[in-house]
Length: 362
Image 1 (cartoon, rainbow, N blue to C red):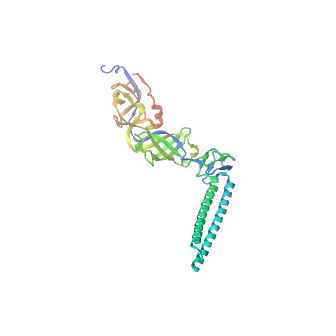
Image 2 (spheres, rainbow, N blue to C red):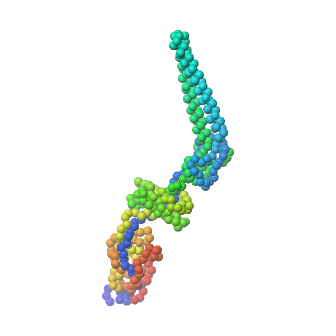
Image 3 (cartoon, rainbow, N blue to C red):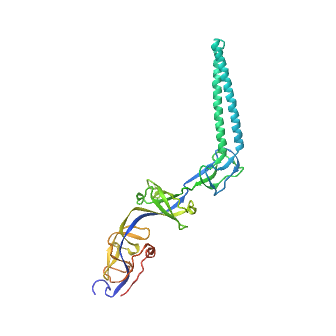
């Protein structure tokens, strides 16, 4: 026979199925990490010896729970002392004001009885007494603040991650006694490429799996960074994890596989990636016309997450596409057809690797 080599002698066994248009959902896929919503350092605000530590690592605490008391009795005595000093300054101010009132009254009823210099001196004493009372009031407020801060309370609901304080230890203001994690809600952080990032926006739902469990979780995107990171050239994305009822498995620092469906779903010709072969003419696939293979040059679109690829040009619904057995084919080669049903996602994993070479004698 004339034409291609051995066409008369050989035909190739191929698995063939009809091309279909399917509903195509675009998705952005990325690795991510689960993190605490907030990490707060619990610090000492006053100096002193620690009377009592009321928490342990891993403990769940509520906002306002007492965590540490620091020299509480000493700060209570300071408040009592400041109150006594304020009482004394108030009494002194009242006494001075009474003395001024008596002398001003006498001066009005008997002009010249009280020298003007003496009145001016008492008025100055009155101003001094008022100032002393104001200083005593501020000293009491400061002592009350110190007493309040001597009892260290949880600033929010959360879980104690680290404890760095012991009973009897002497602390200075600023000493970090514990780290508290707020895990409600938890955060999901991942990165998208600059090409993918414009498809993401706040409010979209991301699904993710932890690599050590089979549970599927959801999170709502709250932030897409306005610019790419200078070092990685990727765009940071943050989402709040929804309370799906199995948060028990979530731990800050866990790795996650993230997927976000983006763009409106639409009908498109999609085929298994396994049916596509690279060539000098670009990506090609083979369709069967009668008992002959025909090469089609494809214009491909986006990949789906389960091993399919969109074909924007080169195939149409109803074309009989070669899925396996196409490695040795050329345009016009004779084929022995084995019709198979269109593959589904569950069968795709097996067919998304290298095709099986099933060429054989006719």
